[in-house]
Image (cartoon, rainbow, N blue to C red; front, top):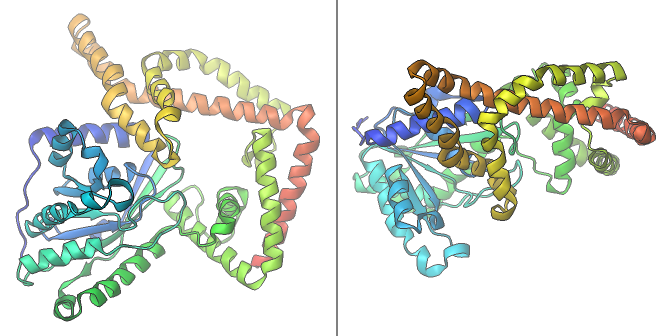
Length: 452
C-alpha cells in the first residue's frame, strides 16, 4: 500500500490543540475511553472517519484531540465560516464548510462542490477526513439514516488517484455518560476499517448501487457499536430505565461493571435489546410498564429527587453527616470558587439567550471556557503572579487550577445531592415518596418477570 506523507499543522495550530486538550480532557471530561485504536489506518493512508453525531462540537473535538498523529479535516456547518477571521482560522484547523438546503438554501448548496474537492484533495494527500453522514446531530441516543456524501468524496479521491491507491472508511461512534454536565465520561470507539479497493470495478459500472451497499455496511457497524434506542415512542422511559437503579441491577446480574463506562455501554445495549424484544412479545404488559415509568419519572422530577435515593435510602443521620462534610469543606470550596467562578457563571449567563438546541449546551460551555473564561481565570493570573510574586507562585497556580475547578464542581454536586436528600426525607413529601417507591418496586418486579 502506498503510504503518503501528509501535511503537518503549523506550530501554532499544534500548540492550540494542546491547549484544547488541557481544557477538554484535563478539565471538562472526567475520563475519556478510546477503544479500537488498533483499527485506525496508518497516517498517510487516505481515510474517511464516519461517525454518529449527538453532541455537536464535542464529537469532532474529542476525536481530533485523540488522533494527534495526523492532520484531521472535518466538515462543519457553513454558517460558522461567515466571518472572514473565523473562516481563515477554522480552515487552518482543518474544518471545511458544509452547506445545507434547509439552512443556506439551494444557491449555497452548490458551493459544496468546492468543499468536496478540498476534502478529496486532502485524501489524495494521505490525510484523514471526518464526516457525520446523518447530516446533523441527533437529540437522542439513536442513529439516523446516512447520506452518501462521504462515499462520493472517498470515491472521487480514488478516481483522482486512478483507482490505484486504496481509500479506507473507518466506522466510529461517540457515547457520553451525560450530554450536558461537565466532569462526566465519554467513549470514542473505532470499528474495523473498510477498504474501498475491492469495490472499485463495481463502482465504475454502478456507482450509486455500490455506494448504497457500502453505506448499509457502515451504518450497520456504527449502529452495533453505539447505544441505539429504536423505540422512539417510549424513548424517555427506556433511557431512564437503563440509567436508573434497574440499569445498574441489570448490569450486575449479567456480568457487566456498571461503574466502567465501556462495560456499562454493553450492558445498556443488552438491556435496550431485551426491552425491545419484550415489547414485541408482550406489547400490552410493556405498554402498562412504560406508562407507569412515565408517571414515576414525572413524580421524581416534581419532588426534585433522584433515583439513587431509593437505593441508598438515606436516614437523618447520613444527611446530617453530608451537611457536616459540606461545612468542613466550605473553606476549600470558597478558595476554589474565587479563581474558577467565572468558568461556571459566564456560560450560564448566555446559555438560555443564545442556545435554542440543548444538544449545543456542552459544546457551548467548552467553547466559552477555551476562548474566554480559561484565559481570564488562568493565563492572566499566571502572568501577574510571575511578574509580582515569581515563577514558582505562577507555576503553582497553573498546576492547581484544574484541581480547584474539579473541587468546586464536586462541591456543588454534593450540595445538589444534599438538597435532594432533604427533599426525599421531608415530612411533607413522605406520602409521595412512599407511593413512588411502591410504583418503582412494581415496575422493576414486572420487568424482571418479563425479561427473565
